[in-house]
Length: 117
Image (cartoon, rainbow, N blue to C red; front, side, top):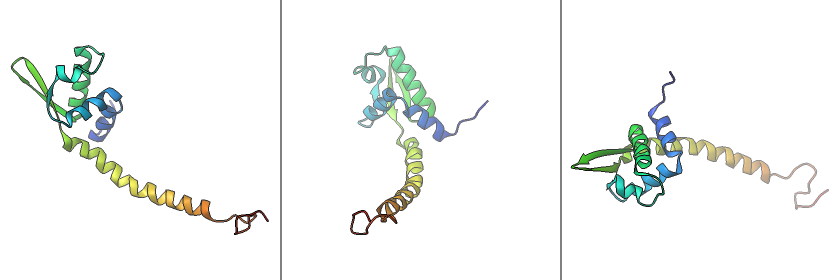
């Protein structure tokens, strides 16, 4: 069986727009599953499945308080994705800078003043 890293699970969880919307909503603070479901046309069960996947990836955690399940964001888990982007961004920027320099250089058949020879 293929083992996925915590980063793989974070990216998988955030690949779905509904789960991204749930995570964005949780930035404002913990809410009940019912409150999370309110803006969606999905069943409460479907939202619960999205929450379960987010929870299994570590992006959110939930706790049952009486009859209500409250869900909160775990920002530390999102930091995994942020570190991945920061690490790779410098490399991408260097490559794009080199490409920009290559595209800015006049070609052999072009006059340096911008016209054709």
